[in-house]
Length: 58
Image 1 (cartoon, rainbow, N blue to C red):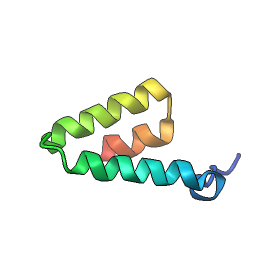
Image 2: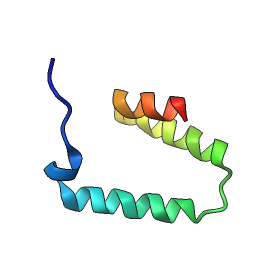
Image 3: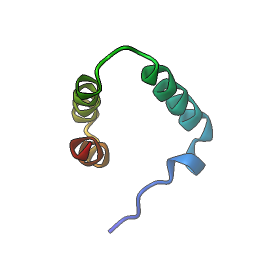
């Protein structure tokens, strides 16, 4: 079994951009349940099982 990639050390600039995006999204007036559905759908489109698991729990 392979270990997961540590995105913070693999691409610090990309992680900074992702965190900035999350901060901007947090300021929107979108209701939290709808926002979680959007995150879940984006995870499905990207095919990221880790993100799917994380956002399904949320």
